[in-house]
Image 1 (cartoon, helix red, strand yellow):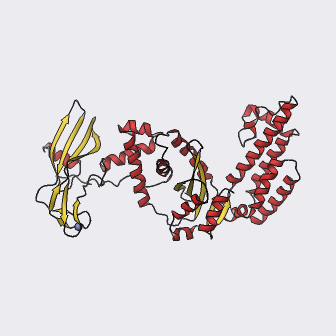
Image 2 (image 1 turned 90 degrees about the vertical axis):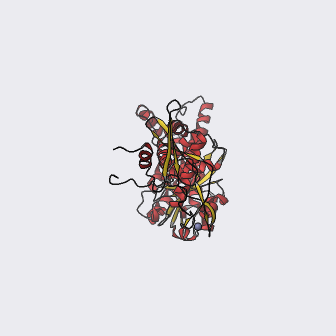
Length: 417
Ligand SMILES: [Zn+2]
């Protein structure tokens, strides 16, 4: 093979005719290679709007695109892109085959960057590996999400979840809509009130809303009101995660009350036992201790038992059995002397309809709980998080299951002579 350096680069870049490489420069000290590309004079340019070949009007000032490195050198493409004068669409800048309009990176670089960002634990780490400024990483993420949302299909969407997450160290909240079947976050809006719920519903088309059969959510008034208003035909399901949360809190509050009372009498039985009462967290060396606490006459132990009993509710075969189970559980709780648990039981009774729909759809927001660790990691890398928009974009990038990378020009399948 004996071809010129220009031709060598033209082939490696998969540049279609009549694009030419007009100059290649290396800077060994600066560790970079620069390649100049040109659309030849006198050749008509396809109008980016209508596709018809039109004469060159003028050329834009030269600009550059970062490409994948060549060996250990940073590779940059440069070009003064022609504008065409279309009879129909006016003066337009032609589309170049190596990059998306407005991007400072080539399709290959952007595609690689998306993969690196997705694989990294933090954006700072991605910025370092890619030798990019943090702002550029943020811009690549925004572009990727925009691309992914434009390509996304919501056909067959039928089971969704509404949930809230804290934002900016718990000072404020965002609301999320998730696709429970597709296991993806569909959208994120600021706040957690009825307006937030309505905004999430408004992110779907009317046909998509009509297709939604059931929605998993907590027992707060906001999402219920928003759903009754925007999607009146969808069943509301208060799933197990949103029921176990207030029950766990009731156990914790009971323990705190009782521990304070006991401490007043010089009894430290409940000291340092908080984590034992939270579901599934008893380590082997504390098991015996925990069992002795359960056998005691503590109110905390009774509250814990009611919380554990309620888990059985979700294992009932159908809504009738679920209803019978609940009524019995409720009577038992109401005959106890556990005000914290009684309060939760009353809330559950008021929302019983939404608990029993579980037996029809069997959905839960477990998925959203699963996203928590990912979102937590995103929050830890809080640079730029003052802006809600950045938070939303990153959640969609990491939890939206979007097709994020630019589509690459296909490589030749056989050798070119
Ligand atoms: Zn045109």
